[in-house]
Image (tube, rainbow, N blue to C red; front, side):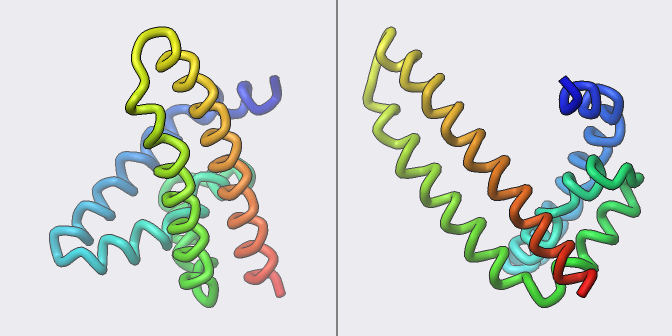
Length: 133
């Protein structure tokens, strides 16, 4: 309940962060693909910073860039492994139909959601602990 209250209370800031992050990543991809990837990875901890530290959008984005220094490659590899995991889990579901598809979609969404939330929090803790050291 506390998590839901936090998200609802900060919904405007979350939406603002998502829009600004999307625009930054999109601009990076327009320059070439690699700047977009760099920006996307650098912004991974921005949502936990926004929510867990009660920061504003600009502050969370700037802090995310600051904290990711020294951990960018590690974060990139973790994000890549999670993306591959998600693809491997989701792909077989695409072959199903009807009730089996619906059931599998629900189970996969739950598994992927838990994995993504856990990894996101782990990345946040790691870059925060590194920045504090």
